[in-house]
Length: 110
Image 1 (spheres, rainbow, N blue to C red):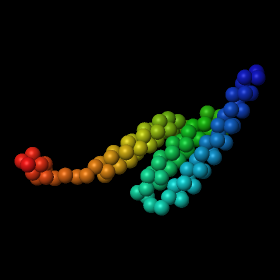
Image 2 (image 1 turned 180 degrees about the vertical axis):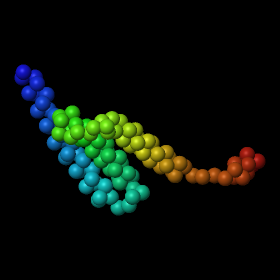
Image 3 (image 1 turned 90 degrees about the vertical axis):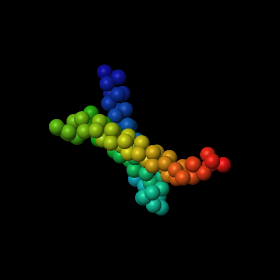
């Protein structure tokens, strides 16, 4: 009986912490200077991630009924993971200096 009360109260604490984290990352996304900044992109990613976790916790507790969208959190987690991968790929290719094929031939001939 005591363990049930303990775990039930942990959901309340978890929900409160997820609300705080979501609020912090929304604030950070708003404070970033441009959409292209790394701070904005990561803040949007973490905001989406924590918001979905918040909805999942609320549905576990029975406060939100998702009905047929019960497993939509998994798809949104997949979408945010793809978004994060795209952020890293775009930043990687943007940071590498682009060389033309003709430049490579000049280097080989010299």
